[in-house]
Amino acid sequence: MSIIGVRIDGRLIHGQVANLWTTKLNASRIMVVDDDVAKNDIEKSGLKLATPAGVKLSVLPVEKAAANLLAGKYDTQRLFIVAKRPQPYLELVKLGVKFETINVGNMSQSDVTRSITHSINVTDDDVKAFEELDAAGVKLTAQMVPSDTASDFMNLLRKG
Image 1: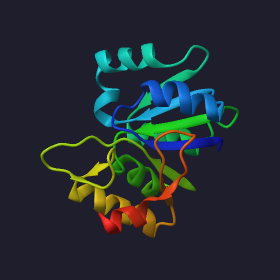
Image 2 (image 1 turned 180 degrees about the vertical axis):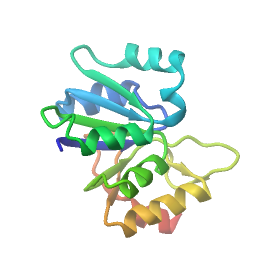
Image 3 (image 1 turned 30 degrees about the vertical axis):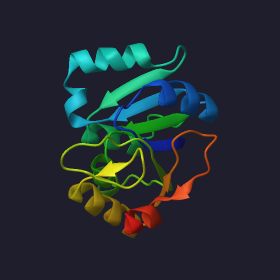
């Protein structure tokens, strides 16, 4: 597999992902993994508009993403995967996809979240998923933009 970056970002494709991360990673394809967005043509159209020129886009439900990844469909590409929350990544891991590191970016605040950093807010379900990913050997880092220093996300989560 040629996964060059894996990020959690509630905004999916936007300025930071489209311009900073995709450029820094020299990604040739962005894969958005989200069961609901994969069924929403309006959201998919918005993501296509936000995707940088020359970069391919896949918007897939978890099971299709896992099948494509495990079948080697993207082996010749530089793949950057984005999801809104940790749960899709946990599902992918359970389906056999291997991730070395997941970068935790922006997770928006709501009335059911608690703040871990100024830009990362988690629910109890998120915490459980992060703990399971950590237990599965996935390194979790917090880094908003490529120029920031990556922090150990699990240390931040335990303090938060």
